[in-house]
Length: 210
Image (cartoon, rainbow, N blue to C red):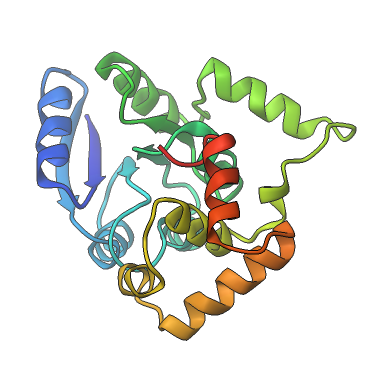
């Protein structure tokens, strides 16, 4: 029986996932977490076969949580289940050590298949994401400009493009307003843009925000 830890800050999502997995005969949700600190505590201190992780929970960034889990428990598969489209985070989380990436729009059967696959030490990606990975491996392919950003800078970019203020971003990421402003300045410099409007236009055009 596969023991699953579900980490998502929305209770209704956790309940929905538990309902989906309740119909299987080979897996059970043995625990759940509602924020990043609880996720780390339970993932590192518990005995699980797979962690299903939402990367947009309150607190430290989900990618940082993923990296910490993988650094201390490298053999524990982490399947990222996110509201964000694949173009936004999939390659980044796979590079950070995730065993797979699914959007919350995926069919329940796909989630079940993904959990079974990653529990066996394999990677799970959709057909579309497989194409993205192949493109990323092509050394002659032109890289999207957002790939020059660090994981945290990319996260701040997406939050800016979603219409969040500097103060709100600072609150959600548990950072100071000054630190977020520094990230914003670096993003503008790296992407050669002048203001939030240009960042937002770019993010929407390249489907980095919903």
